Amino acid sequence: MIKREERLNTLIQVDLPLWEQGIRFTGMDEAGRGPLAGSVVAACVAMPKEPLLLWVDDSKKLSAQRREKVYEEILRTALFVGVGEASAEEIDEMNIIGATKAAMRRAAAGAPADVFLIDAVSGLGLPGEERGIIHGDALSYSIAAASIVAKVTRDRQMIELDRLYPEYGFAQHKGYGTAQHIEALKRLGPCPAHRRTFIGHFV
Image 1: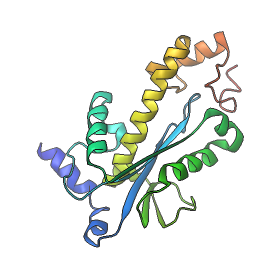
Image 2 (image 1 turned 60 degrees about the vertical axis):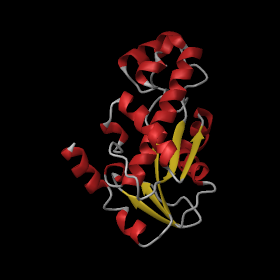
Image 3 (image 1 turned 90 degrees about the vertical axis):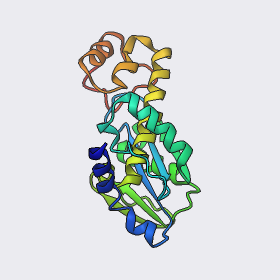
């Protein structure tokens, strides 16, 4: 576990000064900017200084099984968890950047925070200081926790969509443009979950 403890020690360096100064803050991240189908999901999470959860990390570095376990730990431990999303229709209406920001604003609604640590996004108009951090999910404990909440929430949504539209394989690829997904899209055409502005050259 030494490597995990070293990783955790690195991950809290952004958060530690805020905890020590008694500043109320959250981490924010999103999942699902790139897929051809489904919502973009954002999470806003306020984590306490103690206990530190050993396996909190950038969601992309964890297996699906590990993410599920850590997700449950985060829900039990966090001071605040907010989740927001923007639908495929909203993505088509306002573009993915606008939709991502809308999802983040929804996730942050009611958050008890004066500072928002945000993965690579700024200009949300939140009621506090916004600190955009490039690769924040790999650099901040709180943003990493938010990345896990957003990813698990969205993956579960895609599994539900798979039950509604089993021909597309959403449970496997989560809406990303895999060869399997594109083949199904060309053969079947889009379903209501598809982002029309993302699939134009595939259908």
